[in-house]
Length: 341
Ligand SMILES: NC(=O)c1ccc[n+]([C@@H]2O[C@H](COP(=O)([O-])OP(=O)(O)OC[C@H]3O[C@@H](n4cnc5c(N)ncnc54)[C@H](OP(=O)(O)O)[C@@H]3O)[C@@H](O)[C@H]2O)c1
Image 1 (tube, protein in one colour):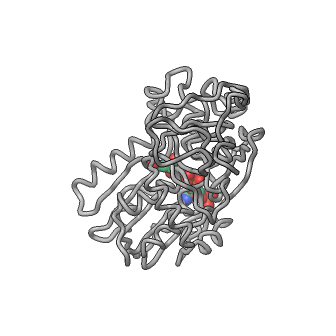
Image 2 (cartoon, rainbow, N blue to C red; image 1 turned 45 degrees about the vertical axis):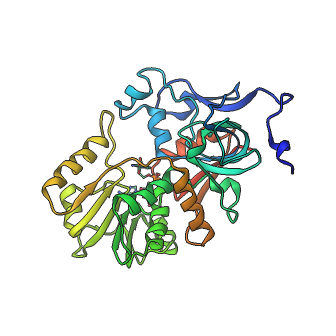
């Protein structure tokens, strides 16, 4: 197909189907509607993508409920500013802004664009996007967004993981955890202990974990094992319990903590960082950054056979509101995809 066939022509419609949030609430069906809205305009550093798929993250649930409440300082107190869910997208570029040099119409891309994936078109900063890996179906590339970036940046950058490190991953079977096990292996971990529930033990093992602890049967903190890196996706242990499992110069990367309405998990994550100033071990808590460069690193890992998204459920745009409700259970196995095209 010629490039020009991918461009958005004037004869094409100027509106699109999108899932739009009108209020905050616990029930996805109360706050989202599927409606026709204008196709977004793009800035000079953005591209317009015809969306093939999006994937769901815990952050979509935070924006749906408007919790923890401090999130509303940025997103609006009563009415949410973030209208269309779906930070992660994969699709075909149909239009590029005047400053964009790295993509052209027809390119198939993926990445974390912040919001807008639950729609037939989405505008995203070119610097947040990467070319999709040839060996992965375009729709599945939508899974390589927020969760994969969190696992990569958490292990490689925040923990500064080294080959030979012993790594513990709590919450090893969800969106972030399934990537974290594979990336820890790709970065040269000498031993990976993965923590998940009974139904996900085999999945964690198949991804490369050397030891899998079923947290419903065994307390993984009741061990004399010491880890160089503890990557915590679940926040189910106290800071002192977590610290006891670290080597003398080990590092705890907390990507979450127990959730609450006002500040949690941010208060506990901040407390951990402050307390670690007094200990030899490092406690790190950060939010992953959208990055096309890191998208390219992830795509490379896919091409080298080191990384593969675990796809849990597939939804369509028509039932994507159910997808948001499913994510809220906190027990997804890998990533759920919303097929848009
Ligand atoms: N800091 C950041 O930039 C960042 C980015 C992305 C996500 N996050 C946060 O990271 C967390 C994980 O995200 P996700 O996308 O992976 O969520 P997810 O897909 O919902 O996965 C949650 C995982 O937690 C596990 N889990 C639940 N209760 C557990 C327990 N008591 N002990 C051990 N594991 C338990 C689940 O496993 P079972 O089903 O086997 O119980 C599942 O694997 C979320 O809280 C999210 O808000 C932070």
